[in-house]
Amino acid sequence: MTQAVELNIDGLVGPTHNYAGLAAGNIPSMLNRGRRSHPRKAALQGLDKMRLLMELGVPQAVFPPHERPYIPFLRALGFSGSDKAIIARAGKQNPLMLANCGSSSAMWVANAASVSPSADTRDGKVHFTPANLLSELHRSMEAATNVRILRTIFADTRHFRVHDPLPAAWAMRDEGAANHLRLAPSHGESGIELFTFDSGQPYQPLEPPHHFPARQSLGASMAVRHRHEIREDQAFGIQRATQCIDAGAFHADLVAMSNEDVLIYHQQAFDRQSIVLMRKAYRRLTGRYPRFAEIAEDEVSLADAVQTYLFNSQLVTLPDGTRALIAPVECQSHPAARAQIDLLKQQGYFQRVEYVDVRESMLNGGGPACLRLRVVLTRREFAAMHQGIVLTPRLYRELAAWVNKHYRETLLPRDLADPALLRESRQALDALTKILRLGNLYEFQN
Ligand code: SUG
Image (cartoon, rainbow, N blue to C red; front, side, top):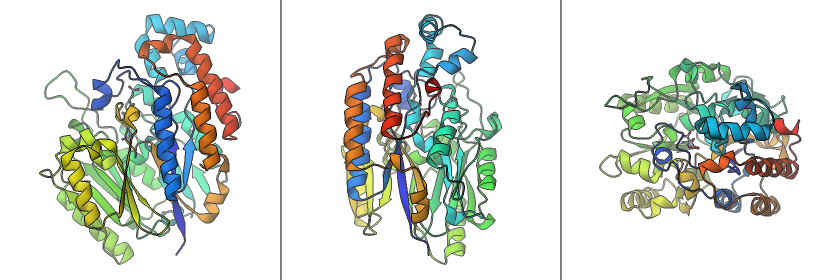
């Protein structure tokens, strides 16, 4: 059996973190539109979560923010002149488009890519498919930069394969690891990869009953599985119930979480038959039974799951083989969610619970698990990736100082039209690429 670890790579919140209400179907994002954000606090909250995992002995790394406001996109839409002039003009003529180019949404790296560990793939490499994020305009512009970042971090082609995103077509809409679960006896062993997808109803916001967009297509899930060369008996497609999406659970990681042989899911998430088949597939592959915990609607309603982000907790393996649940503080103060966590702990699904405050991200619909991309790596693969992003106490201190130096305390969406913000963000990112030893990553640096 190959020994492997699960690396959590967390997206650093960017300097333009703001609440512009851009994400259709994401209830906090829609409700908090226009609210004042706190970029510095947001980035420090994220860093504190990373430090907690590092201190627990869980391998942790950092994913850099994207350049925002993203001028190349505005140029593609016909804006011309100096960067400063473009910002000013977009702010007057098309503030919504400027907001789309100014979101810090790349911080939710659970949507950056789907990842398959080498234990599951035919060629024995770790495969990545950066998500095309087609469903939301502000997120669609993340794909190209994510390709560049992932190819920089996982450059060693002896171990890693970073594919292109899927073709930019509605039928291929893909939101990455947030819709992808894995079950295996341990990280290093072959496992079952669960590709969840949403049924494809169109977005009809004006006609009751409204439907929120189904952001992951069946076509995308199938294509990712094929390109990752996952054996037939190890891949499992599973449709997410439409009621989840319309209740505001726009990704599978809002209704289910997994770690090694444990799957915790909401009663409404999947149909019963899929659960039975999933169990069988796991049993056939490993000769063992997985441990499933179904949370009943009576215990925690779907609405409460969306409100607390209970299922967006991170379930992680600690160095001594026990498990910890990293849950949002919103669960701690919610009686039903709290009671469920206490019960699951009593039942032995995990041995330790840590509540984390990532409230600035939560207000935009992103909980603890949204902020991280899980990459299972053998020791050799870990050594082969770019080491500059791996969190150490020293890097944590450097990054906290960097945030304190470069980030604004507060921001409103209209501040995106301030050319000083563009300058400050670029200075910050330029300094960051040096701290993380990433070279010239951004378009503005070239
Ligand atoms: O895509 N929010 C993100 C939140 C992503 C959460 N990810 C996971 N569940 N894994 C989204 O809806 C808010 C955007 C804004 O208005 O800037 C936003 O994009």
